[in-house]
Image 1 (cartoon, rainbow, N blue to C red):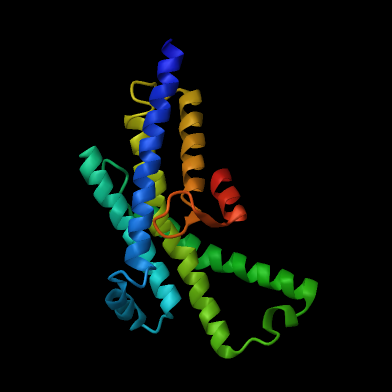
Image 2: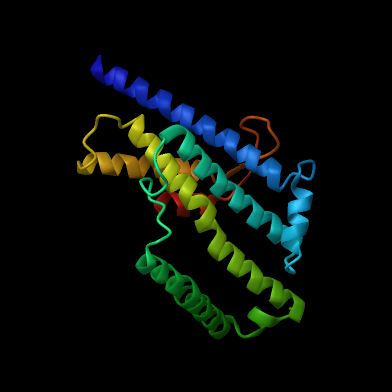
Length: 220
């Protein structure tokens, strides 16, 4: 009986969390990618720094995810952002991530380009590509390399895990290895769920599924 209650409780809170994320996902989509939404003015402002519209909408999407995570944490958990893991004064951590993004990440991209060039020739990198496309590619790499961490990590690593700890795993020994493994596994599955693209507001109308993205999100 106890196990049955535990399973029912876990299922109930997990479904509630999925519903919250579902609503947030569509709200953020409406405010960023939906042309019927109020995004035109903000996109125009972001585009003023010579960003293409699709990149401007992507950046707006990630910033709105960050705002949703911060607001959700403050409303549901009633803790300071510092208690939840947001620490803007940790200079050592900041320097580490700046080093990773501006040194390690570009270096990895450069190594990949060299390997592709050696394997398939330089035409695989530059064939038919104009200077404008190269400029767009650089901005695309920077945007998709930086902003997912700003938008997705607070939502799926902080908000989701805090929600799970306060509901599904409430009263459980957090220091127990099995509990930690269960939290990581469940949060990874939910992270994968967040990368299933759903059209409009119709429930479960999946029209595109980035299998590799979902697999990568689950493994990480």
